[in-house]
Each structure stands twice: as structure tokens, then as C-alpha cells.
Length: 193
Image (tube, rainbow, N blue to C red; front, side):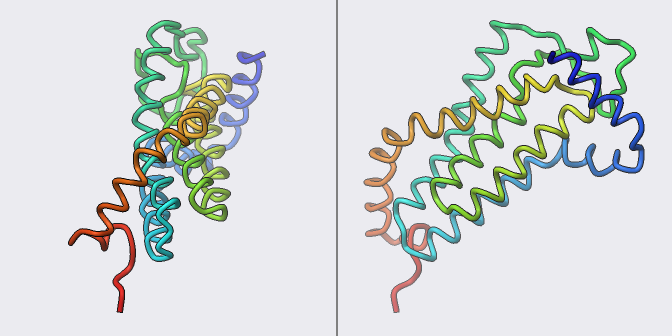
């Protein structure tokens, strides 16, 4: 089923040349948008003075790194070949790599950021979730991953954020409260006038 879904998206990519520049750019560099979303989430949480929301944003960034590490372990253990290695006639729009396909690093990172922003600020989380699904589709569209690779990445990233959030929040919140009582308080809350 994964291969047949990949082939269907690959056929779509073959017929929609007009969309290639957009999907290539997003598949390669869209993670920068998620860095900007994290910054926006931090700014909104900081501006409201909500320590829990600031902690959720900080955790989202940290969890993305943790999830990528876990994904590397899983990827090396499973060692699934990229779809274009198995289907040499696949339409591939990005540079071919020889690393594992499952799970997708891009999807893992954006899944974590989207889930963390969901915990911090719902509207921004909804936007990030939509953009994360678009990233997952883009990675399949350009021929880099099977749909299962990106779905697993999204679930891995989001799952780590949600599962470890209670523990992470217990560690991060006290640190942020200490920071709020220091000269660096502007990183946590707006200036008091």
C-alpha cells in the first residue's frame, strides 16, 4: 500500500510541473519556516507572560532534537531504502541520498514543533500542524519518501512532545521562573512598566 500511494503521488508530480519549484523549495527549506513559527510562538507566549506557554515552546524546540535522535536510532535499525532506490524510474525532484528513508527527519522535526506549538498556543499550533502535513506531502511529492515514512515521522515527533511534556515542563518551568527573576527576564516575560 505504501508503494502504491508513493506511485500515485509520483504520477501526480509527473503531471504538475508548474508546482515543482514550490514543492522543491518547501521540501528542502520549509524547516526554516518552522524555526520562524517557534520564534513567533516564543514571542506570543513571552508577550502574554505565560510561563507554561513559554515552557511548551522551549520544549517544542528541544523535543525536535530529541525526536530526531530517536529517529536516527530507529532509522538505522530498520534501514529502509529510499523509494527511488527500489523504484529507479521514480520521478525525483531533489538530490538523491543514500541514507535511510524511515522515518523522515523533516517530518519528525516539524511534527514535534507543531505539537509543541499546539500546547503553547492553539491557533499557531493549528497553523503549524497544517504546514507539517504539507511538509509531509511535499517530501513524498519530490520523491524522497514513502507516505509511511512521513506519517511515522509526524507521529514520532508529535508523540515525543506529548508523551514527555509533563516531565519536560516540570524541569523547564522552574528554570524559566528563575530566569524571570534575573536580568534576562525579557526572554520570559515583557518588561514591567
